Length: 460
Ligand code: NAD
Ligand code: ZN
View 1 (tube, rainbow, N blue to C red):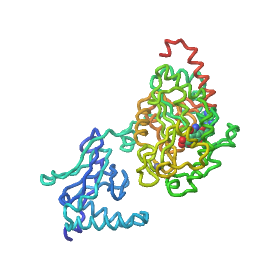
View 2: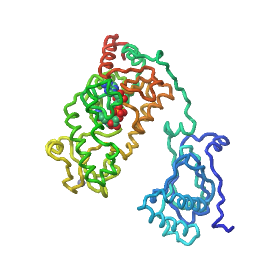
View 3: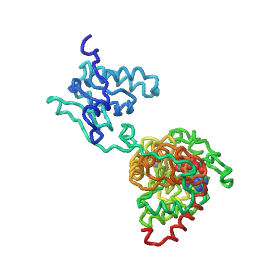
View 4: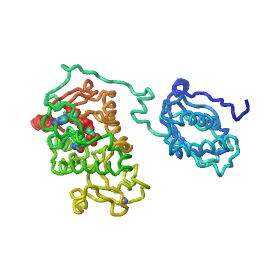
C-alpha cells in the first residue's frame, strides 16, 4: 500500500483523555483552511466534537463518530469515503457541489492542487470536551488557524457526564398544591425564573395551540389555533417557496392578531411584575409571542422571547433580524415596519398577504416559524437564567416543543424547586415540588394575596 491510500488513524475518545490527563476546564474550537502544506499535520478530533466543512454543509455531530487521530490527509480520505457512502442522503442540489468537493480533496490529497487554489474550504471543530487539536510543525505555523476556548453550557456538560444529578422525584402526596405553600417557596427565594407557554395567556382570552384535555377548559377547546391550520405546512421553507403557504400563514395571523391586540395581562402575568417589585424576579423565558409579559410591566431586559413577538413586521427577505435566519431570497432587503407604522399602513387589517414595498417579497412577523432555529443567544440566556435561579415556575406549557422542553432538565438535575402550573400532564410533573392543576391566573392571584398578607419585612 502506498502513502496516498493507506489510512492510518486511531479513534480518539474524550473519555480516555479525561482518564489519563484530567478534565480540561473549557471546551475548545478549532478553525482552519484546508491547504496542501497542512496535509501531513496531525489532527485530533475527539468523539465529543462536532465538526463541519462550512462551504459544503458537510457536518458531523458530537458522538455521531468515534473521533479521529491522524494526518489531515487521512481525515480527508475518511471524509471522502464517508461522504461517498452517505451521498444518497444529500439533496439533489448538493450533488454537484459534492462532486466538486470530492474532486478538490482528491487533488489536495494527491498533491496535484496548488496552495492558492485550494484554500476554499474551512474546517471548524467545536469540542465541548476541550481536547481536540491541530498539531502544527514549525513550517506550518504560518498558516491561518484559529484556536479558542469556550465555557461549556449545561447540555454540553451533561453529555460529557459532568453534571451531578440531584434530581428529586416526588410522589403525588408529597407535592405541594396550596397557594400558601407556593407563597412560602417564593419567600425563600430571590432569583425566580418563569418558563411560560400558551396556557398562561388563556385567561387573557388567547387560545393555546394544543388543547389536549378540552374538558378542563371548554371555553377554549373550540378555538385551539391548530385545529384550524396544519402546522406541518407552516414551515419557513414552505413559506419561502409556496404562495399558498404564505396565504395560509397570513390567514392564521389574521385570526390571531385581533385576539392578541384585545388581550390584557391576567393575574398570572401580573404575579411576575409583583415579584419584580419585590426584587425576586430574575427572568421570564416565554414561548409566547403575545407581548403580555412586557405589557404587565416586567422590564424587557428580563424577558426572553424564545419564539419572537408580533410587534411590527419585517420583509421576509431581510436577514438582519435574529428571527429571520432563513430569508425568502438573497436576504438583502432591509425593510422593517414598526408596530405603529403597521397600524398606520393597515397591514394587519386590509392586506390578506402584505408585501414588502421595496422588494415585493411577503412581509412576516419576527416570530420563529417551524423549521427555523430558536436564536442561539436567547437560548444561551435561557440556559444561563435557569442554571442560576433558585425557584422555577413552569406555567401553561405542554413542554412538547423543542428546545424549550429540554430546559426544565437544568432545574431538575440541579435540584432547584419547580412549581408546575398546567391543565395537562407533562414529562416533568414528578420532579415538581409543587404541582398545580388550576387556571394559572386564578392560582397566582391567590399566591399574590398570601404574599401581600405577610409582614413586609419577610418579603424583602
Ligand atoms: P401548548 O398549547 O402546547 O400547551 C398549553 C398548555 O397550557 C397545556 O399544557 C394546557 O394544559 C395548559 N393550560 C391551558 N389553560 C391553562 C390555564 N388557564 N392555566 C395554566 N395552564 C393552562 O403551549 P406551548 O407549550 O406554549 O406550545 C405552543 C406553541 O404555540 C409555542 O411555541 C408558542 O409560541 C405558541 N403559542 C403562543 C401563544 C401566545 O403567544 N399566547 C398562543 C398559542 C400558541
Ligand atoms: Zn423587501
